[in-house]
Image (cartoon, rainbow, N blue to C red; front, side, top):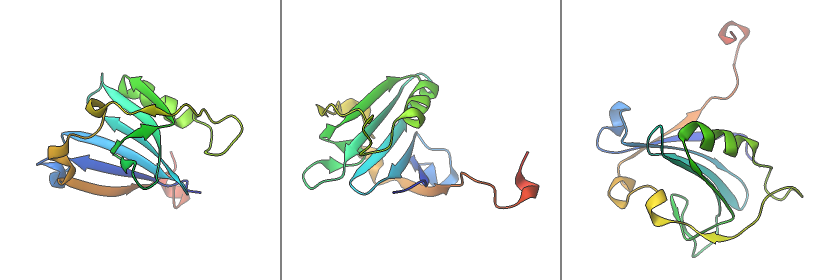
Length: 126
């Protein structure tokens, strides 16, 4: 299992880190946790099975959990989501709304960076 989050920027100016759309992902053995931030008011968080035939992690056909709302609420919902395979994991397979993912025109304009979730030295802690 993974504790590492990845930051994805999409768009013509993503290389200068001025993306049109931002996403964060955390990959597990057979699933991906994804939050797509379209704007401060519009975001979607979901868990998608990483299986053949389910599309890409940014445009899955089926998700097993989904939350849509403001960006801060979507991030909070994802951080509270139980681990995959745990007894308390929500599991309600549903079709993913295509308008919620990354627009196709932006998928090839991606910059990916690892998110550092812990401090490497005591000097970095505040």
